[in-house]
Image 1: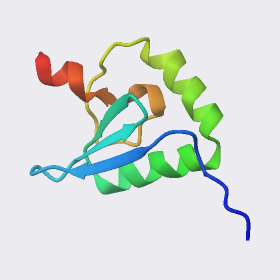
Image 2: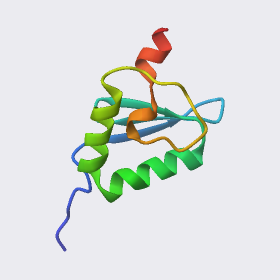
Image 3: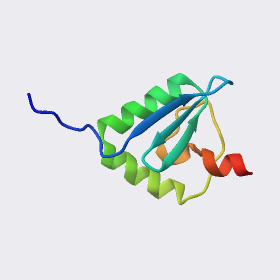
Image 4: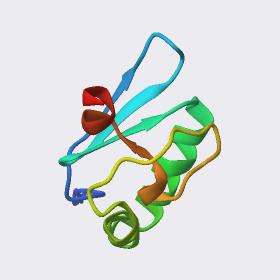
Length: 86
């Protein structure tokens, strides 16, 4: 049985005290307010990792965005590192 890596980056999920999640995909750190939002984002990522990465890079431009409980497209999630320093 051949093994295939589903994506080219490591993925780490850390639950936080307020019920949200910190998602790290490679060097990108994203924050999701709900498990449903996290699950939807991961599904989109696994459905097409290249498209997700392209959208993330197109929308984020290295800037943090506002947190939301909605399911954001890849570039609309909060970059946790910059948000934590604000």
